Length: 154
Image (tube, rainbow, N blue to C red; front, top):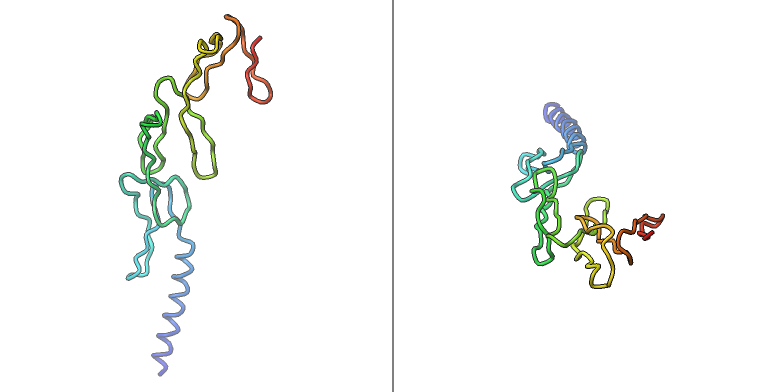
């Protein structure tokens, strides 16, 4: 009886210690938390090809799928996805990217650069990868950005 009780107490103590250790188990970038239910263990497994994890000290049980550029939306890949960061997406020629940043991800879309000549205006600043063309009514005008981020022709 004493041996059985001692064994039970020892198992209970070890189990409590093990559970506590597992609750504090975290993984780094490029890995996810894998749990082996049969062995009651946890370990950090590397993200599989086509997935990534950009967080450090996390408990996520899977990696996130890599973003793929949508060609029909004029998106192009600027930088490949790796195990630690998502694909960097840009836009094809004559398009610029408008992005909105959230806590864990960036959402964006490609928009066509404004053609100043269609509106009878002149290019004051050419369209680039993140900014639309700035058009002014006269050639050679300079532009100033106001406090709201809008351009003014001078």
